[in-house]
Structure formats: structure tokens, C-alpha cells
Amino acid sequence: MKLVIATRNAHKLEEIQAIFDFQGLDVQSAFDFPEIPDVVEDADTFVGNASKKAVEVAKATGCWALADDSGLEVNALEGAPGVYSARYAGEPCSYEKNNEKLLHELSGVKNRSARFRTVIALSDPEGHVKTVEGICPGKIIDELRGTHGFGYDPLFVPEGYEQTFAELDASVKNKISHRARALRAAQDAWGKLLSSL
Ligand code: IMP
Image (tube, protein in one colour):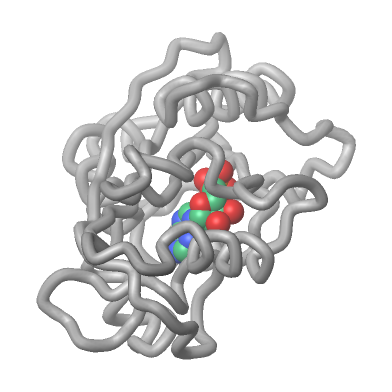
């Protein structure tokens, strides 16, 4: 049985494949199904968007599908950018413009606490879906630091560390990140089920 990872974000795909033990499953990604249109992420929760991505890709491919929806929640901004993290500075999406906007919104703000959140959804080919979640707490610094990773990584220092996600080695990010924690929860919850497919 094939499992499709419902993303065309190469960074995410790399992180998911580095963290999750797919135990002999035939794993493909949305890159292998170019005919499937991009899923419109128009739900107002991470659970809604992750579920929508997993269900649409599962139904379109006839396979099981795993999807992730993630974002950054900043306390001083009442949880923004949240589910709108990708499009925070408007369309077309740009990590650079989003980071610039975040720094602007937080200029002069003392409370820099924030968290990344990931919801992982798993859908069977009929569209029955379940979700798990992972959180990584930290803070937003006031300048970009580092070149690894993607998105808000150069501005986010995870709790217990001095370096940003973009300065830390990928192997460290893949142990402590929101996505790593969600994927470990997914492994605990669904590992047996997936290995029996
Ligand atoms: P998506 O909707 O799950 O693709 O993620 C929304 C946005 O959240 C991305 O475009 C990034 O800006 C941000 N994001 C998600 N995960 C990460 C991460 O691990 N590091 C930095 N930014 C992230």
C-alpha cells in the first residue's frame, strides 16, 4: 500500500522523511502526482487545513495520505500569524517579506514569546481522517540569524537554546521542532496501523 505525503514543500518533505519511520511502506509525495491541483488552505484552524490536505490527496490518489499544517503563534500578536503564517505579508508568499513584517509588528515589543505548532493529519483512501499535534515554544529575536531551514527559522530561538532554528544543525531541529514532536505523536498513535497496511 502506498502512503502519499501531501506536500510540495521540499524542506518539509525532507524533515518528515528524516523524522518519521515509515517501516517499509511505499512512500511517495505530492511531487509524484503533478496532475493533482494544490489544495486550497482556506480553513481557519491547523486541524482544518491539515485534514483538508490529507483527505483531498487521499481521495485523488486512492492511497493513504499524511499532511502537515504548521505556523507560528506570537503571544504579543494574539496568536498571529497563526494559520496565516505562509501568507502573513500577502500574496505572492515570500519568507523574506513575512520575516520583515514580523520584525516590524514586534518593533519595540518586549514580550517576544512564541511557539510553532504543527498538526499532522492521516487520511485513509475514503477520507476518514485523524490528527495529532506538536508544539515547540521559544522566542522571536530582533534580527535574522542563520541560513538553514525555511520560513521564520532565522527569527525563532527555541526554548533552552541560544541559536535560531536557522543556525542550529538540521539534526537538532529535527529532534526538538514542532514537526518532530507532532511526527513522534503520529508514530506513537499510528505506527502499528501503518505497518499493517
Ligand atoms: P504550512 O501551511 O504548513 O505550509 O506552513 C505555513 C507557514 O508556516 C510556512 O510558510 C512557514 O512560513 C511557516 N512554518 C511552518 N513550519 C515552519 C518551520 O519549521 N520553520 C519556519 N517556519 C515554518
